[in-house]
Image (cartoon, rainbow over all chains, first blue to last red; front, side):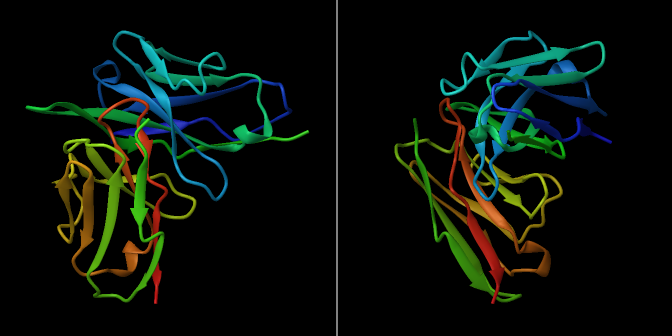
Length: 125
Length: 107
């Protein structure tokens, strides 16, 4: 079946980096983009950006630019997200999701139809 | 950035109730609005995309409406498995933004 499986929980010290992977199966990996969303404990959802699995072109929010790298490995159907210079504020569950597009006369709308199970990243000294 | 607000922030309801959640955008987003359901410890689940299109496999008791700045998610007859937090999300412009969520719990 169509699914995204993420890597396991991580505990990091402030200033360190973390890399989360997201392995796709059950669909053609390069036909879709992968997006990343995070959720701090007890908080709402924050969109981090996305990467085209076809072209490898990434987009990340201005808030995270300079600290985040998104990439893909088309040979294994895996996307990854690396976040550097971690602080306590980066403690969160990180989700990957598949981006689909819906086309209308107004343009193309993005929505996220398949989600990974989430990866807890804890930043603590 | 487009700001999304939701009301109410939480509500208590009984099985069988009709529930309506409102989402408002800080500027017009046409119909570029999606709804997700999230249960504790689980990933979000897509319910509605493009304001009113029901995602495959989602029960028909869920419906969405609206355009411009004001949107609603309606659950026509609340079921036990519907107790969760609901988020709206705009896809009109980057950065994509989510509403703060509406928690639906048991009365």
